[in-house]
Image 1 (cartoon, one colour):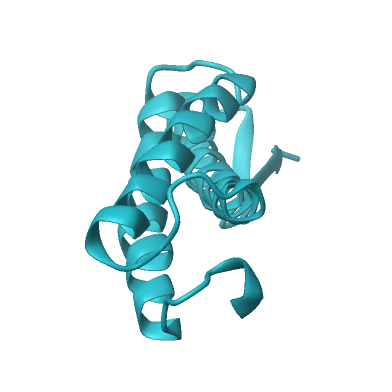
Image 2 (cartoon, one colour):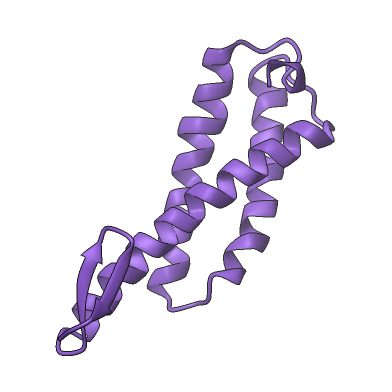
Length: 114
């Protein structure tokens, strides 16, 4: 994986992609879920956020700006984190909005009440 991030240390990758990008993806997923928009809206926003993360790698470290493999890896990670944020928020919404119909079945799922 380090071959995709030429000239960057593991710490730089973790901070820029993991903490900054992942945090933004989680918050974007939550925001999309809170407005009751479907999951597929998240994908477009994560594609844009992937460009922002690539720019952060370029601006803050010696990363390359136009690297397709790095962009794809960053964007897939952002999509995964954003989906987790969306699903966690949607689960809370469903069990809060419809407490007579659904109960929490875990941090990311709900089930019909029996």
